Length: 133
Image 1 (tube, helix red, strand yellow):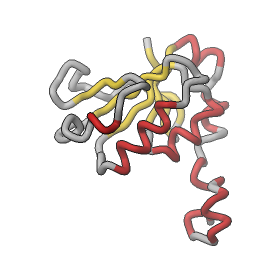
Image 2 (cartoon, one colour; image 1 turned 120 degrees about the horizontal axis):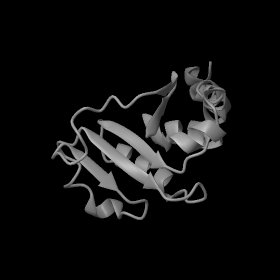
Image 3 (tube, rainbow, N blue to C red; image 1 turned 180 degrees about the vertical axis):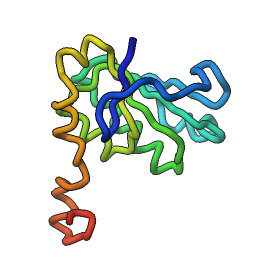
C-alpha cells in the first residue's frame, strides 16, 4: 500500500486512470531530459522514481520537466524523506508517493511541518519578492 503526501498531509491514491495508460509516464531518476520533450506531450501524470533518499537526480529531472513546459501532475515516488518535501515542491512536484512503512517511520506531522514550503523561500526573501511574504 502507498500513501500520497500533499501540502494537506497524508491521503489515499486519487489517480484513477491507472499507470499503464497513455496519459501517464513513469521515469527513472537517470532519465535523460533531452529525450523526454516528445514524450511529455499529452501526459496528465508523470511519476519520477527515487530509488534512494540520497539520489537527488529526480529533483533535477522534475525542474527540467517544468522548464520544458510540462504542466500536468508531477509525482515523486519512492524513497523521499519528510526533510526533502520542501525541495520536492520547489522543484515542481505536486505530491509524493511513499510506502506505508515509510509513512509509519515518518508520520504525517513531520511532512506537515514542511508543507509551508513557499513561506520559507530564502531566495525570494533575498530578492524582496512578494512570494516570500
